[in-house]
Amino acid sequence: MDPAATGEPQVRTIRNCVTEALFDLDPDANLIPRLAESWEQTDERTYVLKLRQDVKFHDGNPFDAEVVKFNLERMLNPETQNVWASEIAQLESVDVIDTYTVQLKTKALLAAFLIPLYDMNGMQLSPAAVEEWGADIGFHPVGTGPFRFVEFIKDQHVVLERNPDYWQPGKPYLDQLTFNAIPVDSTRLTDLRSGGIQLAEYLPFQDIARLRDSQEIIVSERPGFRVDYLNFNVTRSPGSSKEFRQAWNWLIDRDAFMQGSYFGTGAPAWDLFLPGTRFYDPEYRPTQRDVGKAKELLAASGVQLPIDLTMYVTQDPVVQRDAQITQANVAEAGINLAIEVVDQARYNEIHQPRPDGSAGDFDVQLSWWGFRPDPDQYLGVILKTNGSWNWGKYSNPEFDRLLVEEQGELDDAKRIAVFRQIAELLTEDAPVIPYHFGANVKGLTPNVEGFVHRADGLVRYVDIGLRQ
Image (tube, rainbow, N blue to C red; front, top):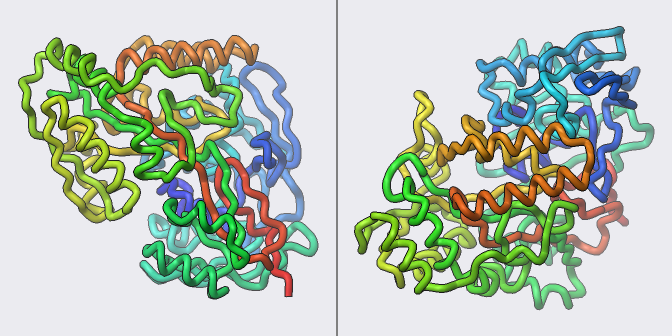
């Protein structure tokens, strides 16, 4: 639960109960106060945050401006190995003005600078706890949140208890939360129906249609939660050939993914801009399945066909279905894609960049990115030169230049136009092949109160109660 570590939605949801960020998002994904009570941009590069007073960490230590400085500088420190470092790479300085006022200065104008501070980079840990636990703070988190950490048992559960000293009077409503790890879809669904659990993440897609008519549970679906895409290692053949990568845009059958993997939920994707945001263009469909066109590009690629490749996937059944559809699609053009199932640790070992900065030992992977309020949060992380999640090691000076342009553009319409240029560039370069916009689907028992399905898919348990 260290904010500098994983960004899996399950972990982020639990982390969000224990630690709080400077900001939050409202149901429409607008930035709202949390530990920062108000804020002001005093010039193009300077932000002044007024912090909530009388907020305490679970260990009794006070939250103040020195704490904010400590946490932001920790996230900037290379020794922390913050996987989200790219989001705040432009933060130049953090200065304490007084006990409850902090000033942030950026290296350049950034239109969406504050937005990442609603999530990982804005999370506030107790400095005393960080000093005590060091690199193990993620297993002993101490925050200001509505719930306190009690217990973690690997592959079983996380237990949290109500924070009686929480700064929002009367909240939270629940005395205890237990997050169970239930990887088998059928078991999770049975537990939900029986009332053994009250809220389940990731209902099996194949059951959603019939579950909508169920009297036992409530199905909640939020579109535009994530984008699924193929990611190429562009540092070696065959992924180093642009024509080879482009061919996949014409080989992929997006309708097959929609029906075969996602059972009609979500939407087909051709770019990385999520539905429901102002950056999304529903008319953008630059390619379609055309094996003949793909073969022309492959012939021009210089890659000798047939070619044997291996795609490594985790035990996730949806990912495995995606891999099988991909395998069938590309086989028609002479690309023999073997599928090997590995555990998460092995998957990371294969795909993550090496200590020297080189790419991992893969040719193409299935990947995805979850909702963020602004594309600048993730485009730079996953595709900018030296981005902290740029596992394929894509590097294009024009892409990097366009990112700088949108970051410095305060006119929203002009900024959106730059993002559409980025969409065209990524279609041309094809370092990634987006194929599906995933919906976030949750199941709830009818006695759950206060649930609001937000765009980021994270449940704010501070607002949740249970009817007796």
